Length: 275
Image 1: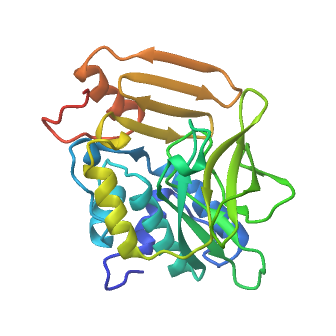
Image 2: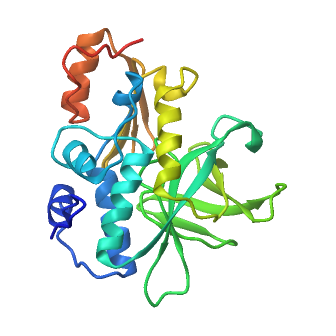
């Protein structure tokens, strides 16, 4: 199944290894989301070269589906949103302030893309996100409700509301961390954003010399057994049982080898990976 915009649902699902039902129901939503998380790595190689990656569907298919590459939030969630719409879900693009590593929500701009998903016949919307490059990321969509916690493929999340000056309610996604406490991930309202808005945000994040994605390599891969993160030259492996292993990679050649063998990423030839 393909459309005139260059997106091929069959090819996308085959790449993910998804052979389940294609109904717009909760089981399909969760299954495709998890398969995407495990099937396409997170990476910022384009931004590291101060180049804004294309968000056009033919280019996303070529890079994330047909090549040994991945992408960051705008690429990943644009691709997922397109697939979910093709499957019959309603999808609204949202922006969020990433708050990992800061105590002040207002100190971070709205630069993260996340998705509000509506399941036909279900009054409860879900939050879906396959583009958050952190160990606190969602593995499966979770209901967009307060007052409880959710388990998504072994991780635990919840929503809390936080005060702010705007007229819309501000939601905070929190993840239950290894230290036994709830850790804020990002804050958002449910104001709809459009593809054109993310074209601007994408350009800013990929070209601004102060952006964290233009300063250091950042690559993530998730499997059922582990979460693997390469930040600069530091490789961190977090096992499903909570064990954490870290090691510094020796040089450019070591980084390129790890990208290929551990992340299934083929970095552009001649690209400088360590800054």
